[in-house]
Picture (cartoon, rainbow, N blue to C red):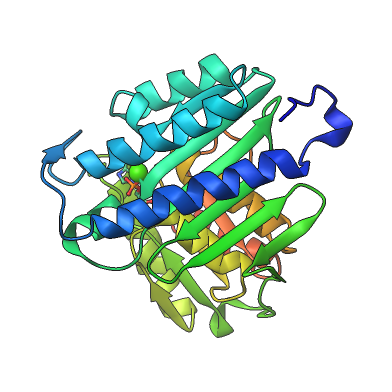
Length: 284
Ligand code: 2AM
Ligand code: CA
């Protein structure tokens, strides 16, 4: 398989085929390990978990990508020291690289550990800092969400589009409760307090990447969370953009790979959601 050098052909089939193949293979393997992992380690705190399955999934994906594209860069959650500073540094070091694969080998590790069936493999390919391919694969439902820059987003091969709600009061939104209990969690709690009475209802299912995919598929109207990493968001952000939605930071500035505090929506409720978080002093 040749390694395209030309920006005009980014998002070509070979990149996408490899991304899909990696996500599917890793996902199938993860599924066989459900309730069957051996080592549970704590990373940053007792809320930040990792198993040998996270590491095995990342190794599988990395090897497969390197077989096809040996000159591409790779950024995976398990190859980075825990903590927000290390994550930001690791991204910074590779952001300018021509092709960078950004991988979360299991997004929703806590769910995986508890047998709660809401976790995914998330794989994104960035070309000079811009995401051009995004794949989120849910092995439990066998649902593969795929987006290519400028070519739309698909689930089960069917074009996705975001939902039609135009106000918070008719919206179903999701958020997440981060592992960082010093900075991120208190902010998310403030947001929760403010947003809950304004929306139809709130969900929090423990995988940022799958929440993002659900916004893209029109199953959620919006999502916000504080303190995420590039690998939690990169694939999901492209899914949403290619489904007609909007992704920004919590202050409303456009999404880029360095964003850690995210607001994602169908576009129509975006301003209202960003505004409500600002009013609650829950944006940063
Ligand atoms: P993970 O399962 O890959 O760790 C849940 O609120 C979301 O936050 C999940 O997507 C989860 O991803 C992510 N998450 C968990 N711990 C985190 C941490 N220490 N830093 C950033 N994101 C984290
Ligand atoms: Ca993970």
